[in-house]
Structures are given as C-alpha cells and as structure tokens.
Image (cartoon, rainbow, N blue to C red; front, top):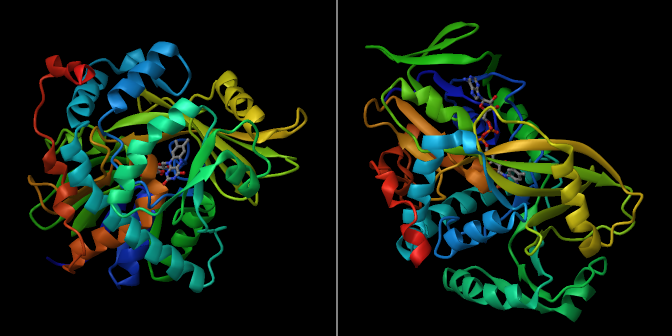
Length: 425
Ligand SMILES: Cc1cc2nc3c(=O)[nH]c(=O)nc-3n(C[C@H](O)[C@H](O)[C@H](O)COP(=O)(O)OP(=O)(O)OC[C@H]3O[C@@H](n4cnc5c(N)ncnc54)[C@H](O)[C@@H]3O)c2cc1C
C-alpha cells in the first residue's frame, strides 16, 4: 500500500492522534475539520485516563442499570425520542452485546489501546508537553453501602483481567480525600490518572504540525473513491489522497453511508461544568458512582461531568437545569460551598458503539477508506493509542493486540424485534 498523502477527516482527539502518529513516521497528512459548531467533544471532557476500564461498557448488568436509571429519571441515562429507528436498532444491538463473551473479546483490544496511549502520554511528557498529566490513580467513591457491595463482583472481574485495585474503607477514603462527605467506601484504581483534554489535543496538534501535517478548515460533503485514490469533496474544494481515515466522531456514519456502509454509532450526550473558588479540591480524579458523576481537579478548576443521553448528532443543547444538577448532585459529597463559581457549561457527543468498543479498520468495500470512531466514554484515554494503532495498520507495522476485534465489519444485520431479550437475564 502506498503511503502517499493520507486525508484525515476530523480533528478531535482521535483524528489528531492519528495525524501525530502518522506524521511522526514521515507520512504526509492532511487533516480536514469543519470546526465550530461541531468541534469540541474532545476538548472539555472529564480528562480521566482510565486504563482500568478494560470491561466493555456493554457488559452483563448494564441493561438493567440503564433501564432502572431511565425508569427512575435519576438523570444518569436518557433517550431522545427523536432517535426512532436508529435508537431502537442501537438499543437492540446493545442488549445483545451485554454478554460475558463481549467482555472477554473486548478486554485485550481495550488494554492494547490503553497501553499504547500510556506510552504516548509518557513520551509527550518527556518531550516537554504540559497537559496537566497525573497518573497517581483514580478513586471510585460510593455513598451507598448497597452499591459498594454490589460493585465487588465487577472489581473481582477487573482484578482477574490484571487491573490493580485497592479497596478503601470509609476511614481510608476520608484520609486520602479529606474533602469528601458521607462516604461508604471506595476503590482506588491504582494505574489510572487524569489530564487536561484540551491541552492534550493542542499538544498533539502542535506535534503533528511540527512533523509536517497540514490542517484545513472545511466541511466534508462526500468521500468518492476513484481508480487512483480517494477524493474528498469539501466546502473548500475537492482534495485527493491515497487513503482516507474517517475520524469524525458521531458524524462518521453519515460520511460513510454513501459508500454503502451502515455504522451503528450514535451520540451519547454528556455535560460538563468547571467550578472555581473551591476551598479544598480532591487530590485524585473521582468517579462518584452513586451520583454517576466524574470529577477532576484541573489547573483551570474543578470539572464535573455526567449524564448519558442517547440523542441525534445535531443536539448540542445545554439546558441550564442539567448543568446546575451536576453541581447540586456533587455538592454534598464534595462539601462544595454555596458560593463556588460555575463556568464553562459544555455538552459533548460521545460517539457510542453498541458493543462499547471503538470501530477501527479498513472498509471491506474499499480498503483505502479506514474508519476510526465509536470511542464512547474512552476517547481521551484511548485516542493517542488509536493513533498508534492506525499508523501501524497504514505503515504495515505489527501490533501487540489483534485490531481485527475492532473492525467496522463486525456489525451484522439485527432484528430490532430482539430488543428486550436482555432484560430477562
Ligand atoms: C461529558 C463527557 C465526559 C467525557 N469524559 C471522558 C474522560 O474522562 N475520558 C475519556 O477518555 N473520554 C471521555 N469522554 C469521551 C471523549 O470525549 C470522546 O470519546 C472523544 O472526544 C471522541 O473523540 P473523536 O475524535 O472521536 O470525536 P470528536 O472530538 O467529536 O471529533 C470529531 C471531529 O470531526 C469533525 N467533523 C465531523 N463531521 C465533519 C465533516 N463532515 N467535515 C469535517 N469535519 C467533520 C468535528 O468538527 C470534530 O472536530 C467524555 C465525553 C463526554 C461527552
């Protein structure tokens, strides 16, 4: 395969990581991104670096958890009715993917991406990039004894997959994080960490440009394979490459649809807010499990993120009540004073695949087109590793894990009447 110019569609964490990995190898790269208003899912997320998350999001028990949350309207999970057929199909696939087999299949690929990401983060830090990286662990905090007890099975499975976890009693947790209130206990995921996602993105972009990558601001209308390569039709004209990587997050399915490919990736919207004026910030990044919030102390303030709303890819609305609810849910557990200042309300669209695994690989219908999307809740933690994996595929290098598990061809057709089967487990 020729390594002439590669066109990358999308400059989020995934596209930018691919650009950095390819250009470091001397491959000519052109990155096309539509910029605002689509830009940004990668910029203001929780910044959790979570190599512990080797359990796929689609796992036994998740259907019941999602259904409970939806029925109780507790704010963690919601479904936008406008999704109709796409939403029903995605849910049917999700239900059928919540199996032990999916967990077993997913773990090596996820671990492979996280390992590669860690190597890239450490390499960037030693090269002098500053993106607020700290790798001293992450704590899952429980305020309900019953959910703490219920989490032990999952922790055992994670340990069985090689994840290092320390259990913390409520006293140990309060000693580690004196700012917490009313906790039942928790688990420290020893090798996790945190970073500032916007700084990581800009560090990778700087590196890509330093190695010759070019960036163009334009919206891609169509991908047209030709006899000699692939044309990318954009609002700034038609661009030609030897190969194209579609890393356009939740907008990826629309871009590959004209190539006859139906990708079941939909948007899972979440919100973040950054709080300043907090007297005592937590030292480590936290998952407040019972509140379903992620909390990260960054140099720009205390970021609180949450919610998982399946919605359409043009829904970037930020209802003020949703953002306020994040702070109110976190307030009693973090002991936030009434006068803390909340800023930077944000929403982002996680590109969610129904089996909880990214979609990485060449299209069977045209192997000059690669898809790279569907990183769900883990795009920052697995993006730089994805860049390395894609560069290895394009440059014919070997990988320590089998990228075939992530192939875009893994989704067969599905009968939406199967929806509901998983509730009976
Ligand atoms: C609330 C929240 C918290 C999160 N917390 C974490 C976390 O702690 N850790 C973690 O690892 N992950 C986290 N995530 C997930 C992470 O943010 C995503 O997985 C990741 O940003 C996806 O990156 P991406 O590059 O695939 O997509 P995006 O960042 O959405 O990038 C896609 C790009 O494609 C461009 N594009 C789309 N269509 C076109 C077109 N037609 N032409 C040109 N350009 C186009 C867009 O402008 C955009 O820049 C969180 C997400 C949310 C919403």
